Image (cartoon, rainbow, N blue to C red; front, side, top):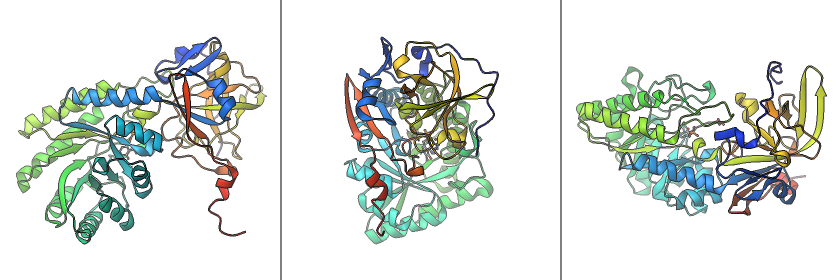
Length: 453
Ligand code: LLP
């Protein structure tokens, strides 16, 4: 794997930190030369905690959670916001999610175990996954989770059987693939027909399986779910998905005489990774989805269902940044300028995996214009190991602290120990205070599971 060829036409944008707009966490500011988040000096924090380091702006996290809830509840009374914990998961963020009154999406036994350890109310937990093991299903049902989102006919039988054995009736949703092609990277597109997820509507398969769900003895079919993909900018895809789902609910009412009470439209709202990205706002997303549901229910004379959405990225991505120290500089004339940092694909696989890109600034030169085009490469043994490709940066020197924005979603949760790299610590900042909420891994952690040698 190697990097895409350098974009020779790219010009440094001359922007200073505060000109990066939506990319920045809520409380980002520049005091003197330095970048502050949550009233905390990022250069000092990097010195205290070491780098690489993930830093989250607590005010930003809370603000987005409140914005989501208000955006939906002010338009649609019976609505809930489910945080998709795959985007970013530790006990500290779970406390915020609980305090702010959101529900929680867990995908599999590990995420469920974290939720239980954090004391998250189990009746607000939604369990996802296309291949939940019998063990995971048993754990979820005996923990008393609110809903299991059943992904297949095989799983439907399994859930009913396990619930029966445990002597309970489990509330379930069926995950439907609505056949909507969302406008996003194909790796994170999930609602189209060729997908490993959910019940296809082709050849009436999903419709036929509704009968199975209604007849299964130990489950109660409460709702339907769909998720059309991730990092979506075009809101019309959500409207189309809502229309398909509600038409399907009307068919179920007419054909089976059964009223589906709840509709979960999944996550997927895109965010600004670069200053040129222009995502839709949470309010616009809420407006389009709630209006689509109301319009469609009126068209089919259906009562309004409880409405749920399941965002991950748009709750946490911009709240999080990564701090690195510049260790090596390498300029290849007419080719590229490499700035090597003390992390890389182990803490940010998104660049290599999706050709994603992020905005960097030098935290100790945050007031200066970004006059150079650089590639921030990591310290791993791969040519394709980069965090930022051909983006503007202030003139870099050895020992500078680089802050890369919008790394709060899917960075920590997809991190690895490649090349024996301990995963960074996680710090929450707020009102001038910082608290280490997840410690940095140690070398001992790397060997903690080895039983021999
Ligand atoms: N619900 C379900 C069932 C999902 O599968 C996902 C994400 C979400 C909700 C949350 O979607 P969001 O609001 O975050 O877009 N690793 C990729 C993203 C994969 C998304 C997987 N599913 C990335 O780094 O871009």
